[in-house]
Image (cartoon, rainbow, N blue to C red; front, side):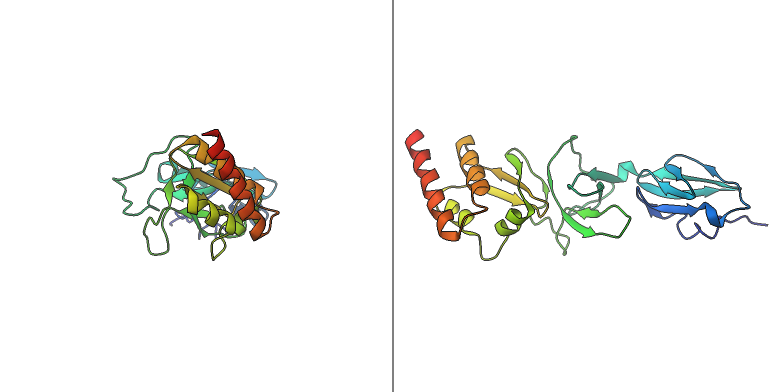
Length: 224
């Protein structure tokens, strides 16, 4: 006789799971005794996942999560939970070509999957699998703003503050819908001016944004 895992969890065995996934409901297993291994925790009748990996089962009654930390990066996206970024979610990503990041590295990513009760899944590619500017953001300066301001910065056509700055200065920006903005330029003074202009623009009209930029650039010339 071949023993099988409980029907309440059999569909999840050998499948990827992330923190927060409920894999067992003990209220439906009154006559069963189970053993919990690493990566699982009990909260009353619910057995949930505490780390990214695959749910495993061994006879007669043991469950655990086989860690896949080497196959995923955990990323803080200012959400209610961490998101995970598969190591293959990069242009040309292979198991032999796994990117390496330091703790606290800043990444420009795209959210590709969000399901209730599960950690969001990210990618460093566009829908066609190309890098398209996604990935590690080196150097520069990152600051946080409201999500309303970040949406304005991403508006089309380009928002007045970025358009006005771009006519006079050379810089790069990456804007996230989570309210995080990255600015990079050849000189620290340019980074400061661009960052201040963006932060000051939220409550200004288009005309007021252009006037504000002109004043900031005039002060930059006077101090140089």
